[in-house]
Amino acid sequence: MFNQIGSLEHAGKILNMLGAKQKIIGENLANVDTPGYTKKTMNFSDYLNPDMNGLEKKINAKFGKQSVTGIENTGQTVNMADEIIDMQQNSIMYSLASRRMTSAITEMKTAINMGR
Image (cartoon, rainbow, N blue to C red; front, side, top):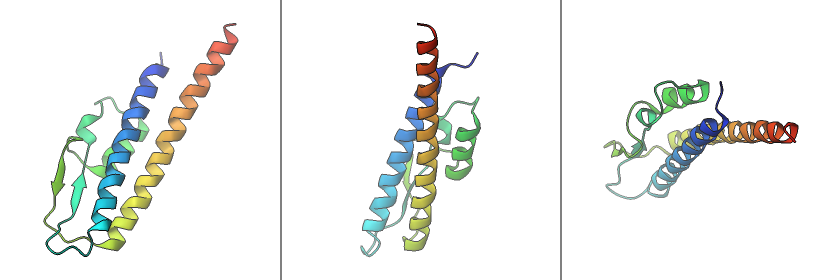
């Protein structure tokens, strides 16, 4: 049986992780001209459950394999075009996770209303 509460928890975790990723992208863009600044990345696929659904698999494919707390300096300079592309992709993933959460809430409301 599909667990809507679990679905909400997963969507919440994903939204939080994507928000943290967006913050790092913003930091990279803010420091694009800072001498000595190196690009930071954050990957969080190991944080997600091994029995992933489709959305989590897409996020894993996009962000690679590392802990959510694994913010690392790449040693590379920041490329503004790459960061903007990452920001757009991250925004799309955030939108998908938000829709997933909305769908789960709608299904729960429907079930509650039918039980009255």
